[in-house]
Length: 606
Image 1 (cartoon, rainbow, N blue to C red):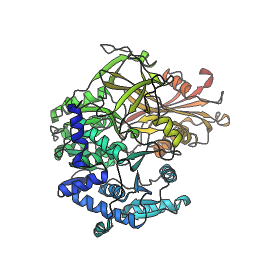
Image 2 (cartoon, rainbow, N blue to C red; image 1 turned 60 degrees about the vertical axis):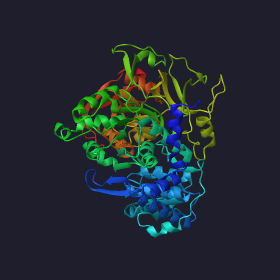
Image 3 (cartoon, one colour; image 1 turned 180 degrees about the vertical axis):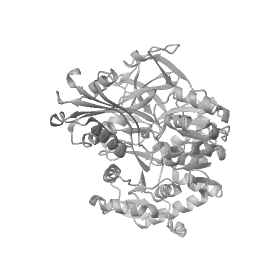
Image 4 (cartoon, one colour; image 1 turned 120 degrees about the vertical axis):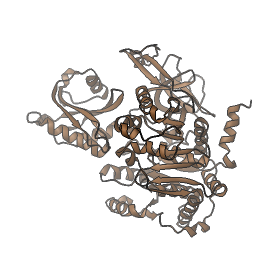
């Protein structure tokens, strides 16, 4: 049966009758060559540089020709770019050359960034690195410290001659061709490259366009990192898909002055923009009444909220705060997605009001639902993440029996969709385990196992937590074992291999707590303050995270189990010997007053 949704899908998906990202951009350059595609705000405010669709196509073809002359077609290219238009040209240049793009971030001044780059290069088997002339010296210096990176070819793309575009040979790519590897923000030692095909990207773009009604005359604003799926798919691929204009700024421009995001929306009359939940909260706390008086947000039609747990209170406070600026409650479009599904799985559609569900918290923790009509001390209000479109399907599954959950149960979120990626690069067993799930009772499948927990109610997805052993803070995933290693190595008084890292909810926000045993030989003369500061500083430097609480444990028993340490903290079964309110030195977040609690806890209290 032909439905209006199916017709909308056909109209959306067959943009200019193309099915690859290569044909997509090339067609835009042919049919709307002089339309401004991307504008980058150099200072986050008024200094700008831009690319039309024709200019982007020419740059991409020139870069592609250079790559083809090096015999790089079919290889993987690591893209190490700061925020800016150069990344976009290089990304499409790879696609134009039949090279698999691997977006990453240039090495920073810490070993963790190099560890991650080395792990990605090894996993992706990259043979070439693309960057800018300004970034090249830093890349060369850091790569010289890593012998395993010595054989990589380094190519700067911002100085490639435009006339090389004439030498470009159109690659033999189809919808099933691998377009890029989206490396998840997982374990530093074992990053996983999600294989996104051209068809995956096109299908998810159609899904985004249908849900949020992006059109050729839409204007997007984004400060999201280009190496993150949210920033890449929504902030870069979606504008090209619809042939509209997008205004970009560096993530640091927003973090330093959150008002810049809303100023850009106001100045460029943006219709679409989105960010994780923390960004809306940061705007509430950091934008002054005087600054709000200069904003006009009446053009903003879709405010996407995703990438981390969405808070009802944050939505309400933002809407109340910026209502005088023309912001409308219906503008909010909460959503759920993950890199393994390209980006979007479900979302509220444009003009739909946000939907909430208040449940009993104590039974929710046991994966059962009791819906309540009023808030109370044992309640939790969840934000609906909308429904699915096109061929995307969600089932809620009991993770032990692999059977469908009952309507009043919480289970693991499983997804089937043409947006679901091809798997993890060179990881067949993990691909089969994550992307090849089947229901035990019906044999239906395959499904993507997301590792997230939730339930469906009135065709709305509600996400309740995580099954995976991950810490997600401000939209970024962190493996506990990486943080635990950093903590254990931060001070000589700490015992190796006897730490735990976990997150707790504090005032509606996920916060990091770490626990570590103290060496027996260090207990008598332990300087608690010095140890705490060392842990705090190490975690900030290596992971860019604030530590909310630190538990120092007397080594009566030698193992610190994550669930036990978490229970000790949650139940406040600790002897606090030191309290010190501090301001974190995490860049851009100095306004957040953190309460750093350090305690020596006899493990017999467990």
